[in-house]
Each structure stands twice: as structure tokens, then as C-alpha cells.
Length: 126
Picture 1 (tube, one colour):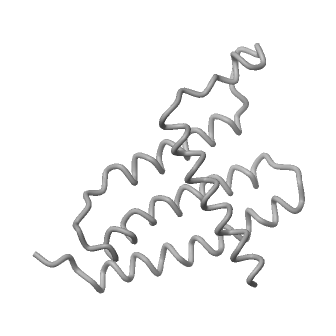
Picture 2 (picture 1 turned 45 degrees about the horizontal axis):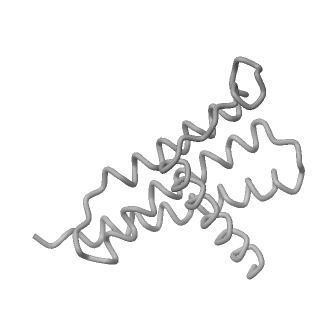
């Protein structure tokens, strides 16, 4: 269980780093790298997931309440991880990574539900 938690934490950090770098620099397109003329379907779906996650996190106003801000921003972050894991399940071939993707989906969906419940139980002070 500890190794899964460490792996999920590492994956979360990697996703956040990848998204930050992606948002700060224009990555070369698949076209430029391969000359194929089209992105691979998985690449397009990963990009869509990344953009949705970054947009979701960027559109949330900070409140000054660290607990609320943490949860509000982690929900779209976790939703992005779920979407990326679904892309892995759809296109990935490596059995270990597919199992990791299944674990990510299960863990992140459970955490998303918890965070949404927490927000509902802790309305923002006015």
C-alpha cells in the first residue's frame, strides 16, 4: 500500500510538472517530430486532458483559506489524472502501466468524491 501511495504521489507530481512545462512552453507538435501530418489519437487525447485540467485549476479563485483552495484546485488536477489514465487504458499496451492506470482511476475517483463532500460540508465563509 505504501509503495502504491508513493507511486501515485510520484505520478501526481510528474503530471503537475508536465502540465506546468506544457503551459509555459510550446511543445513541438507530433507533426514536427515525425512528419506524419497528424497527431496520434492518444497524443490528442492527452493534450485535451491536460488542457481541461489546467483550465479547471486556473478558473478557480483563491479564497485565502488554504484547506478550501487546496481541495478546490486538487479536484480538477485529480480529474485530469483520471482522464490521462483512461487514455492509457484505451491506447497503452504495457500491462503494468495499464494496471497502474486502473489503480490511479480507483484512487483518484475516491479522493475526488471525498474532496467534493468536504467542500459541500465546509461552505465558504462570507
